[in-house]
Amino acid sequence: EPEVTQTPSHQVTQMGQEVILRCVPISNHLYFYWYRQILGQKVEFLVSFYNNEISEKSEIFDDQFSVERPDGSNFTLKIRSTKLEDSAMYFCASSTTQDRESYEQYFGPGTRLTVT
Amino acid sequence: KNQVEQSPQSLIILEGKNCTLQCNYTVSPFSNLRWYKQDTGRGPVSLTIMTFSENTKSNRRYTATLDADTKQSSLHITASQLSDSASYICVVSVEGAGSYQLTFGKGTKLSVIP
Image (cartoon, rainbow over the protein chains, first blue to last red):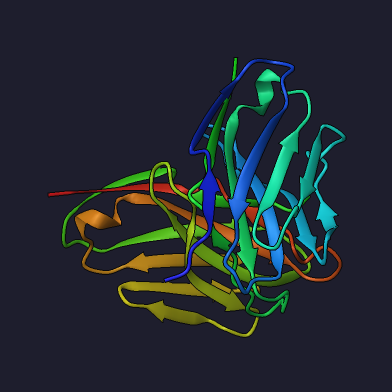
């Protein structure tokens, strides 16, 4: 069964460093998303991406964040200058459609980012 | 502000027993409501998606109900198994501009013990 994959599974970085989190969405999906989950808290929407541009972003997704689909398979989230509060689990998701009634988002296993 | 509240925060039940998890939401305008299962350290996996017009939806041993008037939903798990131990998250989608956004509850942590 097709699945969303994410690498690395765990990333440790120092405050102020840039990190790139990578995702390979399901191959026939057209819509891509990033979410984060701070330890012990709820999952929060960051950004959605379609047709090589951001569709929507939350207030969390500030200028420190960027997303890119550099080729036909990868979808990346870049954090330019990490802060301690960026430590969280980052989930990538993808879906085939934006049909409001039924669209299903498939989540990857997540990347645990630890900023020290 | 759109919010999703779940109860209880955690629950311990014996294997084979049934349980019901609750979700209240203030999201408006409402598009659909989903229940996800999240194993520790893993991404959420969808169990059900319910639209405004649906009252009940079943997926194997999981039955979700929705009352759009009172803005409440429940997830009933029948004949629980050890593998049901996970967090169960209620997620609501907003209709209109920004329908890509899902608003997540904090989840109910279910532990099924032998």
